[in-house]
Image (cartoon, rainbow, N blue to C red; front, side, top):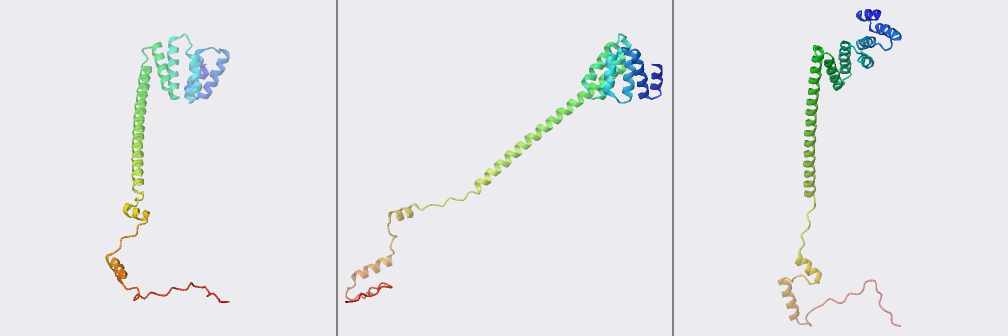
Length: 212
C-alpha cells in the first residue's frame, strides 16, 4: 500500500495500480485497497474499470471512506456521461457526509447540465416539428399547384352545332340560294325543243356491239 501510494503521488498511476493489485492478493476484501486502485484507474482515464473498484469500495463500514467512494464513483460516472447515475452517487455521498462541499457542488453542477440538455432537446424537438409543419405546408401547396396546372392543360371540347348536325343526320339538303332558285324556275319555263342538251356520254372503255 505504501509503495502504491508513493507511486501514485509521483504520478506513476499504472505502476501504483500494480502495487495495489499486489496488496489485494494479501487482502482481497479490503475496501481501502479497492478505493486506491479505483483512484489509480481514474487518473489513468480507465473510468469503466474505476467504476468497478469504487463499487466494491462503497461496501465499507467506514462512513468517511464510504462518502469518498461514493463521491469518486459519481465522478467516474460523470466521465462516462452517465449523468443521472452520477447524481445518485453524489446524493449518496452527501447522505454519508452532509458537510462535503465538493459533493454538493458537483451535484448542483450535474443537475444544471441535465436541465440545459433537456431544454436543448425540447428546443431541437420544437424546431424539428416546425420544419415538418413547413414541409407539409409546402408539399400541400405544390400539390394544389400541380392540380391547377393539370386542369389548365386540358384541351377545350369542340362546340357542337346542333342544328347543322340535325340536318345532316336527317339527310336534308342545304338551303338553296335565291339565284339558284331563279335558274331552276327559268329552266322549267323553257321550251324543251329549244333546249340543247349534251348527248349521252359513251361509257369509257366500252366497245360497240357487232351485228352478226
